[in-house]
Image: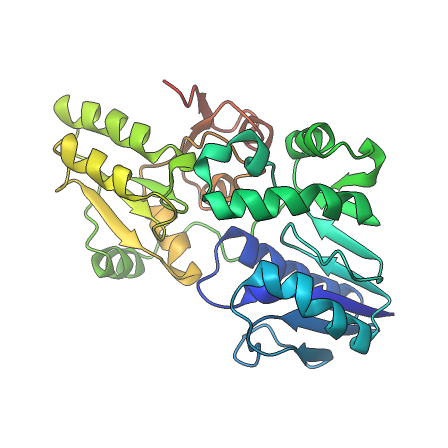
Length: 319
């Protein structure tokens, strides 16, 4: 077969969906190397570390707005490359393409928590997504919770949506080497003990309420720092204001984006990982922390209770 794969998320500072696509592509090629793989991207892929020998890279050139590129430029690229099937790992797919496709829809945040998205993303993506879902030959999602949300909001048949849960990369395991632990924590100015959060700094992750809870711990005399790992996302400024308002500026460490190689060390050095997100399709940091032997506090809502099971402390994220 000739398999097309939309690979735009392999570029730049990857987060959850980027690593999902990277590992999925590598896994498909390892399991089924007899097929030809054609990558489509709105950016040059030649510097991606994931380009493997039997791939055929189809570079459509630079086109900055992914959603616009997908609906205008990509259909012609797919037509020329002539794959038998395409996989789109990040929600959207071109409506004008006649190639059968599978799309991964990770969550329904656009419909369940619309206030946490930019207006233009709501207008464009929320309009396109129902059409993408209905035209897809199949839909992959990452939890049973997300599957129910997709069926309810996009009105697609339940049997069309397959649950393929995320897994943790083998690189996430306990780090016990004291030199490595001290070297990486020193790089980010982190003192022990600390509570860790990993994710984009944005309202949906419920970080403002995490800061409020942390401030109460500090007033009770706890020595911990709060380490927020992740790049600033949409509407991050009120979160920074919350840190100042509660007088914990010296005790909250904002690392910015952290390369994946350092994450197992930061997980392993933490006293616990707090992930009180208001809504997740999966919540991979929960499993990454567990794989590193780190206790987890997370939300008893959306997919998080499904993913964590009885192996985490589940809390009300709105308290």
